[in-house]
Image (cartoon, rainbow, N blue to C red; front, side):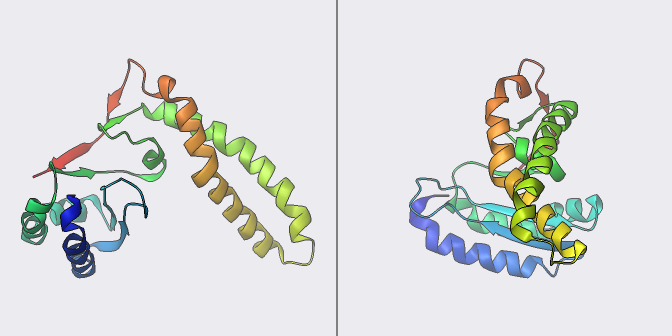
Length: 178
């Protein structure tokens, strides 16, 4: 996105996101903005759909095509649509390359196993014994997810990048939108 168009682009993005929630099969939308003070000009839209057919219909719809035509003069290069599911989001590459699923599974296990052991060890003394088991388990699960999402997986993906994206790089189901 070109910086001079940021205010207008953000307005149009918010309108598009709001209106898109009424599209059949739409289950949610989250907007991602560049961090304040950063040099990044990358925006993102995380969308979820009831089915792959609903997703494909959305991206082929006149509604989506009209929006992309409206913002075309504000962006540099083509819009990129990445079809991500679950843990694959941690492994996405800017060039569209994705490691094989088995490598993603192995590295996820390497992250999940020690973190799922460490987080309860750290949190249990803090939580005490007065909370119901369901609430304690929920808080511990939340702690595991937070540590995996913001600490564990980002570090592991960087450390293991050469192994993940070596010579046997597998392309994912990524498509470029016009």
